[in-house]
Length: 401
Image (cartoon, rainbow, N blue to C red; front, side):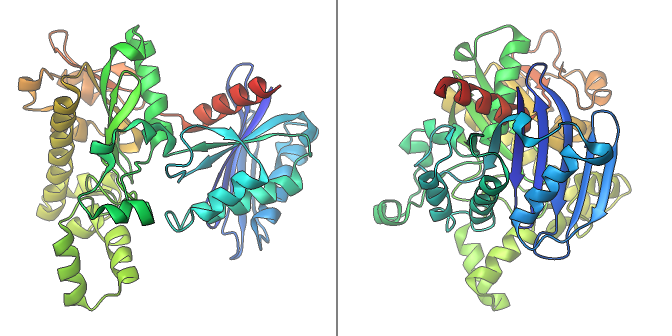
């Protein structure tokens, strides 16, 4: 069975085609700059590549290009779209309506679109992509939606409610939703398998660290708390996002700079974080390089990042009444030994001890990096959200037959 996995943004359409017989990626690519000037790129498992400027007025034209890429020319991997058994879509915001993946209907698309106010950059483009996909794929090809927020719907009210007047939640759905749920679900499951244990028997702190970062407490295979909140802005300092900030500091700065609410949101989401503090870059690799070369602001924000992650690990251990493992995933989590070391040092009181040499020499592969006498195991677990989406899609389609 071949499944197409789609991740649509406001101006992009990323895709992977997987053969679920062996869970191998047959082809992957991106149609970007939709609505601007358009560009498509792709690569197949045979090494064939595609790169071309294209005209993408809407997501429909991007989907048509996707079909052309995988069915014709050097990048042809299937004869027609009839060979695709289903399409799985990543959806950022499912709010408290969707607590699991589901088959797509017109009503489901409308519900996703109606949540656009909660995720304006993502949900409307998701809905556009779902409608565009229906125009291109065979009518009998099912679509499945997998929500980033669904994994966190197991959080109890005490974890997801804010200390705002209750009507903010009742009337406007203001609460913690959490994000990166697809990744946290995948890596916590992979870790349980690697440890040879059932997820129900483990308390895990999952650290998804990248340009966007979130920490999640996973107790018995379920999310019980997470750092991202109403939006992906909350939590630890990130590439261009501030992370958690005193709300009064936000209103104070907005007044000082004369910013509108939308401009202040842009300031917090796109001009803060590693970029804003360091003044160097939003890329942790460049920030770390600058810190190593003596840049004090880069060193400061690197220390802030590790310190904040460390605090959340401790608080989540308290929330779960213990912890069996800490895992690192995402671009930074899998590849930055400096961040992993900075987070884990001086954590012996919580039972965390890492092998520093092993940590320094491990990048991007499943590996335990804690010492044999560490009471809490520490792991690097590469994430694969596309594979989880494909697995969910396969399971839902087969269950619907």
